[in-house]
Length: 262
Image 1 (cartoon, rainbow, N blue to C red):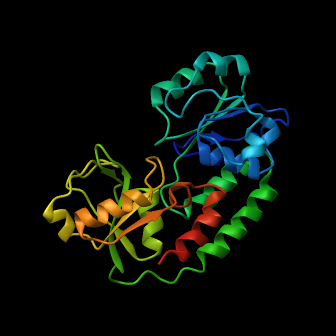
Image 2: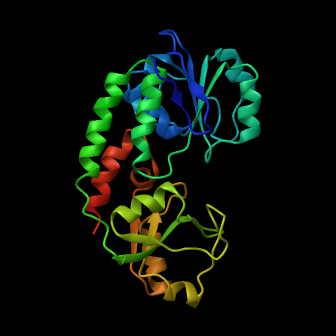
């Protein structure tokens, strides 16, 4: 039996017992675990883990992705914890590792990384057959994208927050999703910051063709679209943040959604 290697290189050699107790601190992974048929083994989730609604409703909330209730998690006596490098704080994970035997770290950085994610969780929790079904569905959707043109179709600015305004770097899952469409995410001068702040300068506006306002984590709406179009003189589109930023099983429908964008 091969070991399954997570995002920090830790090997998970043994298949989890059928009575494994899982806490997930990653909303998209919580959804994936349910899709893999593991909802009955989930004993804790964040308040942002909202899909699938009926299945997660019975799972206790243990705080947010960054402000978790460590004492409550301890009472749940989990055997496994699933976290993400971007979404969870390392000191929190280190504190949880003191009493949770198995920590699984995830960090998809591009759409194709979903295949490894499905197989990692499918292997660790003994549902490899279902994981392979998801892999086949994902690959089928990914194969429908045409080769990326040599020159970007659009230079875009993907906005995730305002006050202050924030975007994503090109070294993120979101930016690499957009690349499948031939859209190149604007690059901030502050290289090395994955979620940099920015200002609406003339130089920035000269550098982009279109603005994308994400519905999460900030709840941008069509009202924001109207205001920003008048302010910038650029086309502005409201996009579904879950579809473009959530990896896991939602990424399958996310690829279909991305293809549908004009």
